[in-house]
Image 1 (cartoon, rainbow, N blue to C red):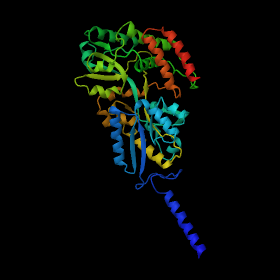
Image 2 (cartoon, rainbow, N blue to C red):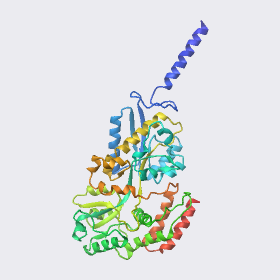
Image 3 (spheres, rainbow, N blue to C red):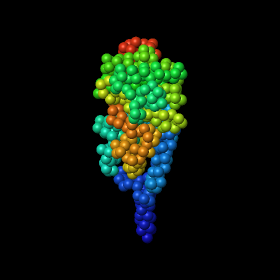
Image 4 (cartoon, rainbow, N blue to C red):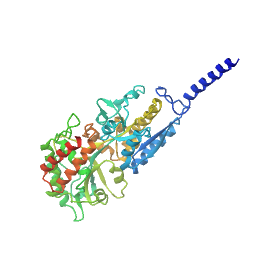
Length: 430
């Protein structure tokens, strides 16, 4: 009798343990079942989006949560400046999020540091269709033929112009487009003619003389000349095409010092344009939302001109990633992937922030076409010259910008600046 009671208690204990393992919000490791309607999964999403970007992302998260009651996303907004540091330390300590954000240019570094999960083992069971993405954007997120992220956009470097000022200068056609010959000299002629028509408190080209945007213009011109990436195919050797790098930099330098169509040391170039004091500027598409909310500003946006041999520009992308977990749960990963694809599929909402959607079909969608300006520059997605997938991209960019700034301020001869840049790049990668 005593032995029989013992066996019965053991059986009850085993049944209880099995029941415990198959209930709750998490499933056992390796479980391949998607979340069922009565199995709620709560996922933490760390994002770096603020301002208009943040509002549109929250709007999409709210819609997803409403449409998918069994998968709920908690959006944790982190400061841009500290986002990547917190992501790396969070993942390494086992306290990272279920879903994160990475710029395409930063992705290889995060992969190298063991922060990002490869997606291919997961998408094998979710029938992910990679052909629906713009292939130029998608290929930039791949490393060694493997997928590590769902791209949701590209945000390239484009050309903004003031229609009122260009019209007064006779530089606007009947379709509201700049009258400009697509060549290096054509752009100079355009800028000089515009400058000659302006009042003393106005400028032709509002642009900073240091930092990221002059670097982005140099990157665009360098690639229009056929320059290759600044790192070799082995992804660890600096490789600058000196003749093309110098030609691109000298062209920009002349805009500051020879033609003088860009004022030096301009503190806030976008505000100068917003105030109606600048004929044009170049920067990222994320400025579109700000400009279209500026009362009385008649402006247009288009790809940057074709200065040299081919159309090319600088650009980066926002992607969604699965940070590595100490105990990966395939069910939660599949739920996260469902959310990531939902965001990519709702690119017409994300485009309101100015970005170009990563999914090719979105740009033909009626909702996207109703947005002003976006269709005028959407073609740029195919001509973005992305960084190679090197873990040193961000460190090298710091070196490049620091040395380019010495060219713009005319303190170092162009060739000397690039020689110094190359030596500093070798130290970074060593």
